[in-house]
Image (cartoon, rainbow, N blue to C red; front, side, top):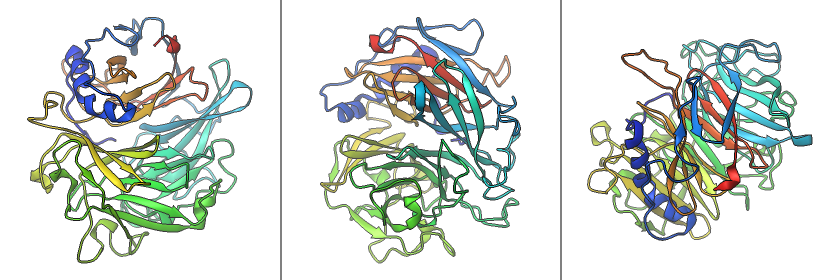
Length: 458
């Protein structure tokens, strides 16, 4: 997520733009009808109130608490809070406690690495990983420690139905590259409660590639994976069929079969430009060499019929009876078959149907909003929370069940200059199991918030 996805309109214009952008996607998600309302901050919980501390603007009645800041000491004493907070999930604890697992998308130039801890470190030269925070019923952090270390470019991931976190490396660097001593580009399972019980083990059968996010079908345990490849040939959309589909911690280590999606006659999803287009003959092709020992997966031989690619495959989440995934943009000048500012797709496993939910770009009615947002979380009070990811002002937007779009938060931490301000993107939006607290990261500098307020009012 460190790579700029899109240019975001600043101020009030961004709010209006977001309302247009999610019209089609919200209709799909909530099985509603009609277009989303375009609002200027009047819907939802009301307009944002400027924060006198200059940190985070929220609607009236909401409060934030900073749980963790980059460079401050981890409460475990293991070192400073690492850089580049990214994907995150919340898990239940006893007596009203919540455990957070937080990714750190650190590359070799990161200022604050995830400390290398014996028993938790995959590669001592990898600066990424995850930290785990225990938040008590009083809203305060009681524990903050390293959950996995020695990984690289931990971007997003996804929770499992058995309450563990799958953290994804968004890199294909091999041993000897950038100083690494081991190959990278894997998924790792992290136990938020007992991080060290089995050690850092790469799930090699799930593939070695530039992972972005995962989502699991709770009915059969199939894992869907997105690949955020930066150059042609672009990434693939995968499914992993686990050998132990009933799940449980460590079950994914038993292996399984990795397959890539093929849409007959469509080598590049960017060429599909009409929302509502449906493909009902989706095929899944076995990946010849999942660990990519010799050749990156997207370069491998998938037979005469080839395979289907897409530029910037990112967000991936399970909702209802289908998995949604996002292509942030496509640029013909970079090798895509056509241009767009973002696509949202859905795949229904039981019917084998792939549907283009919405496309952004000139002539679509969404051309004033840039490219689509990235991180999306289902909100327990209904609707969605959407993280901004790009240049300019950075917002979290909410989308109601009535398809109204409203601003939920704005980052006010200026990491640029007074003349040329810059704000770090939002990431890792997630809710506590009881739905009373929204947890949220700012990518740079790492800042993790707990946000409380009248959520049920909506």
